[in-house]
Image 1 (cartoon, rainbow, N blue to C red):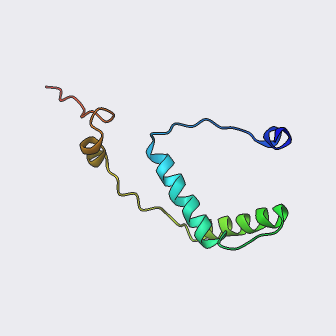
Image 2: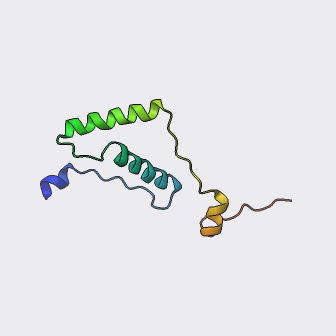
Image 3: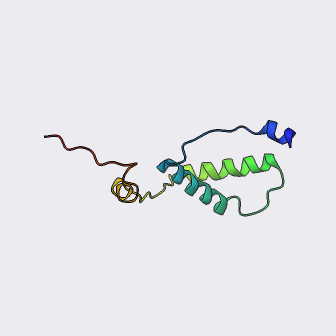
Length: 87
């Protein structure tokens, strides 16, 4: 376990950010389009992911994000306060 743990690198990221949801969506797309089969070697895995990424970027693929600021204020008002109106 220690040998494996030494190979890991932890990146602490915010848990409550809309970008995190977009990352999860993209990982789901990667899993469905590229990782839906057994890949037997780390080198081949990196090549497959790189090829998938090139194809996705060439197609200019986008995520249709539908969670708007107004929806965020409705669902999580304290985290997304309405801007104050200045007179």
